[in-house]
Amino acid sequence: VAGEEALMRVDEKIALDAFRQDEREHIRLDAAKCRACGDRICIRTCPGHLYTLVGETGEVKVEWSGCLECGSCLAVCPNGAVDWSYPRGGCGVRYRHG
Amino acid sequence: MSAGERFDVAIVGGGLAGLSCACETARGGLSTAVFERGAECGSKNVSGGRLYLGPLRGLLPGFWNDAPLERLVARETLTLVAGDASASFDLRAPGLAKPEHASHTVLRAKLDRWLADRAVEAGAMVLPESRVDGVVLHDGTVAGVRVGDEEIAARVVVAADGALSFVARSAELAGAPRADRLAVGAKEIVALDAGRLEDRFGLEPGRGAARLLVGDFTRGLPGGGFLYTNRDSVSMGVVVRLDAAAAAGPSGPETHALVDALRAVPEVARLLAGGETVEYSAHLVPELSFADAPPRSRPGLLVAGDAAGFVANYGFTVRGMDFAAASGILAGRAVVEAAKSGRPAEDAPGAYERALAGSFVLRDLAAARGLDRFLANDRFYGHYPRSVCALLEELFRVGAPGRGAAFRSTWKLARGTIANWRGFRDLWPARKL
Image (cartoon, rainbow over all chains, first blue to last red; front, top):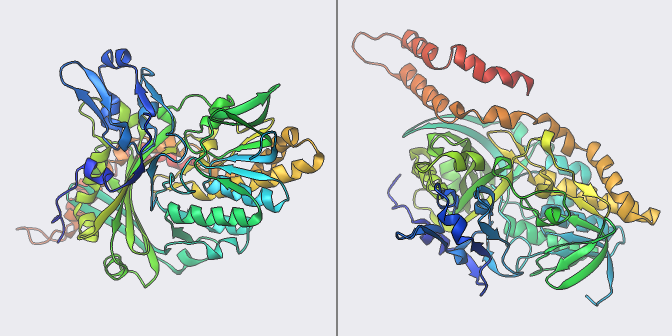
């Protein structure tokens, strides 16, 4: 019946995806630039919801290991705080359907 | 890859553009290498899910007959959504199956792997797990690619590395990615056995449905939702303009929540009930209008597919995969032609531009020019779906005390919402499209 299923959380959805983890992070944030940012567009825009605000420090953290490699955060950051590259060859998300 | 070896063609990206290009150059007798950053071709690629094969048949007759396509689209539905209400326009027509118009649902992991096999068969070398970090420049001519610390020489490089194209950037053909030139898509694959899927979507065995939805589930952001039926799953997702998403302010919607909002639309929930999500993916879509298309070649480098911005946004659907394959084919043929002159790096760009200009790629993209500006009007994503649903509800409502036919009250409502000066002004620009 319609609407019967409970919606999955986005982290549960990402857990369904296959990954080969890179030991090196492929996203780095410039903490000073992030602190100076009021809007934190990245937090809303990332389809994986991987950006979060840490406590009271105002620091933004990214859970890069679940990255879906779309690049939205790179394109929306108004301060150039996102240093983003694709994971190294063979690493990162591995879509089985696409 | 031995040191000092030089390829005739180095192609960056094992997607539809890159692999189509590789098939052509390898068949043309050129030594061809495809650099794919994923563990295999297709493993990094995401599409909404529909490929228009008609235009490609003209370029390569028969080629796609054996491709692992999901379903031939035999039913098209456009649905306007307002809260729990929805109004649909539904088309079934024999013409949808005609070879020249036909579209098929596809899953890229399967399709791209098949195309990679065709490229290898033709003699190309496909190198997975190879991330290209930039191009090698010699006196202003692109002369190869960099993979980590290694420089690989090539007479011509083809950048087919998608919407973000780091290769085009490193060759100074493109700047940093801009939110106002991109849309973001997020998608779930929902498993549903073929029998139930065909029942629910009202399909003959093996046939498919494309359902496009526009309405308030995007929370006012220009964009929409889609459902494409695969063999035994449904591709369900949303695509919204990235600049609008960024500008929505702190109270704006979170992208991932829009997918849930789509699935919660009663019409969608009914179709997918009991279906299990098996994959979640996200991808960027270029949304540049043809007028601002960046340069797509320079000596030694051709840019194809999403990397060149070859995507048409028709509002109800985004079309890019056939442009990608076609531009890859044309790039490949241009390199083969230029190789005959003995100066491929210098001659390939001109040959590629001429081939593009004579093809459906630039013709159809030019025809879509201005659509993106027209479609940026946020009234199409909230006001109109709401108004149409309300109008139809008024029209079909019978039985209130003192009511006869509802035509008069419906017309009154229409005057207040759609059939007025504002509506005229919203739609008037469409005459030029």
